[in-house]
Length: 312
Image 1 (tube, rainbow, N blue to C red):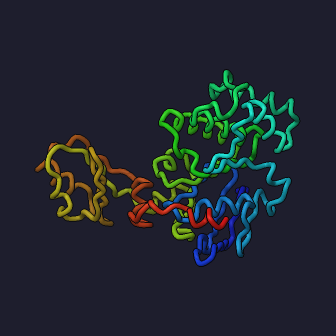
Image 2: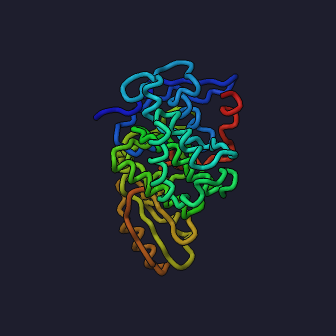
Image 3: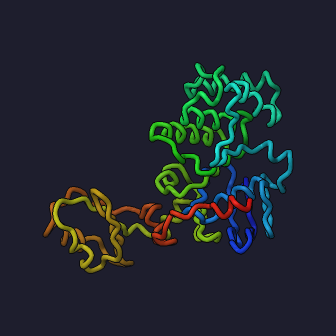
């Protein structure tokens, strides 16, 4: 399979802080790839190195089969977590400018921008200054600047950060459409629900190291299908003492229960029906959220990439 991005033993240190520590993985072309990890895991540093904004201390990165250079960079689209728009420019003028940066002629940039503005309901704002747009509208405009030149590889750093649910759903649909048309999508996130809905390939990193990488289907298969989702009425505190129960993840309306290897969920069902009103009992694959917690621990997501940003 063709490889869009290949990282080989990447290291990056800022002062005494080791942000990336021997990171290696490959991103196949045409996939939706999630770079996952808690805040501070090294995701943003990794993306900045892929984009050649900062250089690794050691190791190698190849993009579309070659080291990064100007011709390769024009085949990429990059939407950073810190949005970078020009507030005093009119929306359509700004899109023309960003298109020209990626090699489009002004008339072509405008021609491509109009359908995007219509699709994202910004066409009535095209002659307004960017600063007049709401935050949600600015996010849409930022997205258009990223895709206007029709990149082969689209890289998005925490793309759903700060978005309301309506815009999140809109962006998911747009991303999947682009992928269906052949664009390789790479995005970083610590929100496992977004990754599970979009990705077919992932790399889970922690403390700058690869914990898991590969297809989402194969990773879930590796962690088994001996997980039970149980929705019930009653006091379920006793479930932890049922033989064969290894771990319980509690949610507002249900629990997810990991059974020990080789244990049948039947015993759990019998115990539950004897003492609870069972609304739903489903044997399923483990969620990406629970795989994440099991592999890197609950930890704290309070630490951001501030150390990385301060030294980048």
